[in-house]
Length: 149
Image (cartoon, rainbow, N blue to C red; front, side):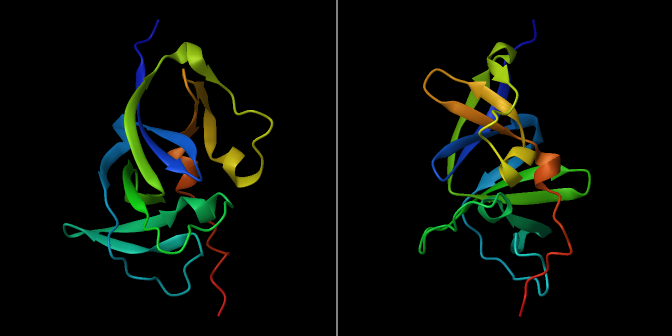
């Protein structure tokens, strides 16, 4: 049997999500960002991370969830991809959680739309479910959905 997998957890609208720790570069507080003209609405902007320019994707918007409440600043989960670092804007950062492969299941049928397409599956933890984010899919942004106006 494989050893337990470690996940960096975060929250969106109260739901717990996890990203494999090996994919996470760092977790940081809100950073000022520069808007990108004509970028798709899911791209909140670009942040300067110690000289590295990183695209910030609003996961709430990308998954079709409700907008973040006014005054609530997002946190950044910076992941490593083949194309460089990408920041996922999330509501809140959780702990690092270990999950055994025996607790993993495919995404439930109740998950639909964009959320379902970005989830690898679900771990049934003792006190809650953890949705495992497919970071490769979450980094894919439709460039044809440019902001209007």
